[in-house]
Every structure is written in C-alpha cells, then in structure tokens.
Image (cartoon, rainbow, N blue to C red):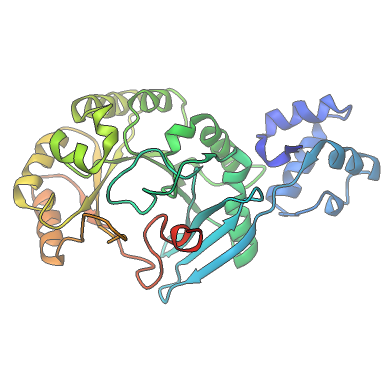
Length: 340
C-alpha cells in the first residue's frame, strides 16, 4: 500500500482526484500530517467518514517505532528507528543556540565505503522513500514535543545516490502548508557524486550544499574515500565551481581531521590553494574513532592551528562543535552496535 507521506502536495492532489475527491482535500490531509502531526486517518475529523475509509483503503501512514534512544549530557538525542520492514535507521537531534537541528539518514546502509565513517560495513539494503525521510522529522518532533528548525542530510547513506527521493522529501519539508522548514535551513552533504551536483544546481532549490572533501590530493582522498576513484578532486572542484556559478550560493566543505594523515600545515596550504577564489566555508570536523577504523582524531592543537591558518589566508573556517561525545556519536555506531 502507498505511503501517503511519500507525496508532495501537488502529487497528493493528483492522488486524491484519482480516488474521486476534490483536490482541496489534499491540503486538508497535508495539514493533518505535517501541522497537526496525526498518526491515523481516523484523527482527520474534518474529513467525512467515507473519505477516511477511502484513504485507509488506498494509503498507509508511515509511523516509525523507536527501537532505542540515547541522550547525551549536552542535549543531543540519537534515535534508532524501526522502519517497519525489519530494518533500522539512525536519526540525531542536536541542540544549537539557533534552534533544533536534525540529522537524517537517506538510505539503509551505504555504498560509499568511506574509511573513517561508522556507516562503512553496514551493508547497503535500499533507499529510503521520501516519506521515510520526512517521517524521521515527525517521529522526533512527536517524541520531543518540539519543532525542528534545521535539517542536515548527513546521516547514514549518500543523499545524492537517492536523488529523487531526497529532492521530493525536501519539497515536502519546505512546503509552507506543511512542515514549513526554510530551504536555507536544509543542508545536503555529498561525498562527491559529480553528475548529481550538476542536477542539484539546476533544481532551483535554495538548500545548502556540503561537500565531504577530507583531503587535498587524489592519493589521500582515494585512500579515505573510494568515491574519489570515480570522480577525482579535479572533477569535483570543477563541479563545485560550476555549482557556485549557476546558483550564486556558497558551498560548505567538510574536512575531517585525522591524526598524522591530513592535519598538517602542508595540507592546510594545499586546501587554501584548492579553494582559492571560491565562495565557500570550511567546516573542520574532529574525526570520530570507530571500531576497527584506521583513522584517529587529530590533536586539539593541530585542529586549532589548521583553522587559524585557513582564516589567515581568507578561507572562512570553523571547528564543528562536538556533540553527543558521551554516546555513540559517529554516524552508524548505534545501528552497528544494536544490529550485529
């Protein structure tokens, strides 16, 4: 049966017309799902009993169950959700001064095989549907009795490898008649699927693009991120420059600092050279140590020196605040621990 949360408002109107109802009913249903956040068609009490029965016959409402929840002393909450087919995904809620940010997964498992990520080793099973992506927000809002203001696609999976469902989920999140999360408050992180970066540039969606860079030359990046063997740094940088030219939007580059690997002054100099002339921001990430992982966190001294050097050369760089360090903070850790 079709998950009603898989449809953006325009597509839902078509579905509702197809079952013999007026299209405006879709707006009522959309409001029930994303403003009132009901979990049953029976609760949509301004719809006739006949229409509610039709909805039950034609659609399901995806409502995740919480398999496990961890809470950090800093307020971070990490969820392991049952996606109702025997699989599980992770979602993280983070508290910032500017509001609540949710980190959502886009796939069950991941194909990218990045060596520093706890998602590596989690077998790819399938893409999440648009409704399953959006349901992560709804499930967390229902659990915390609060609203989410920012969304980052940085959980398990490569968002641009599930392109159509991710873009449709963003349209659902962004709709002012629903969750009404501003596109500028939504960030998509990619390991560097070059063709999809061009697709995203032409979508005319005002979300933020984050590039998982993590190294400044092909040798180091290929060692850390196998995707670099398909789309090397030169191709990736060209796509990024073209993206900026098409959208006139700043790109955020994520750079996870690994001890004795990519965290020295020479790496910082190469990064400045690589990003010269681009409208960008560098988000330096103290890397999380994972089970059987090769890479370990750089020293605080090196992280600060790296940041200060970039800033001194006109590249805006900040150090990501470490959240959830007293729980399974790294993407994929909670799922790996509980579903071995």
